[in-house]
Image (spheres, rainbow, N blue to C red):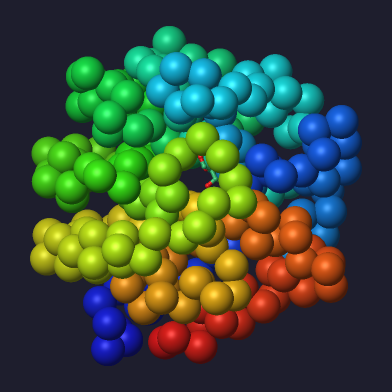
Length: 230
Ligand code: DX5
């Protein structure tokens, strides 16, 4: 066990395809897999829970046959339970719901589990860890948003690091096998802070697609920087 709780967990580099050229989304996912990413996150936005609108399960299904890495759907959607099965059928093995978007979060997470997927729960920056106290037994990972959701390319909110650390301690104290994911503003200048706090799933969009040295360089650099914190 590393000197920081939870640092013995495997780091995963998880691209968000939000900055990709949506006209060539399949090619972008093939390039991400070739660059060595561990899974791909699809940011699903409904224009209500967040002030942006992206795409639905049919787009994810179209990409699925072209790559083999696991897919996760980050549902930034108001009351998304009705969509869960569609994203599982589209090929997502993990479905992430926002604590703030589900009036009956416990029931909604059971919808994910009943559909045969892993359940993740996401917290917006203002939402405290206590909001997920009574659903931690249902999830395989907790997503701590390090930006306010809706757009890529925003600045990392470093004040989320104590929240990451608190959730990591909570998970360890309860002996739960839960990964902690961070999403938003993750790049070479911020990834070590997030990793030191206890995150091991590292979502990056612009931090990967914006690397002039290419995706493979970006993935390797993020992974090496995270591993350097052990
Ligand atoms: C926000 C999105 C973004 C995206 C990553 O709703 O979830 O966080 O995944 O964007 P970057 O890495 O560009 O901040």
